[in-house]
Image (tube, rainbow, N blue to C red):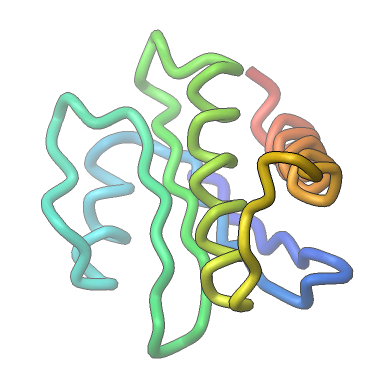
Length: 114
């Protein structure tokens, strides 16, 4: 399993990325007391309030995760970061949201190489 800490500049947040099998990720999921991580689940994104971290769990044994799945989970991360910081999404001026999404996807893909 790969575990990496991604420090998000400007927003001063920390993302813990885990890339592993369903069995490995289920242990992480259970450790943080998250909802069930079913066999059909390919990825999960969550905010854990106690340690104040964002979790990104991605399965390396899911054949159809792909770049789209990574982008999907990174969008959840963007939303969670904005919520935590009290920032509102702006449909008419979403440049900062798009730059953060682009940056997160690029970071994740540089680590997991799918």
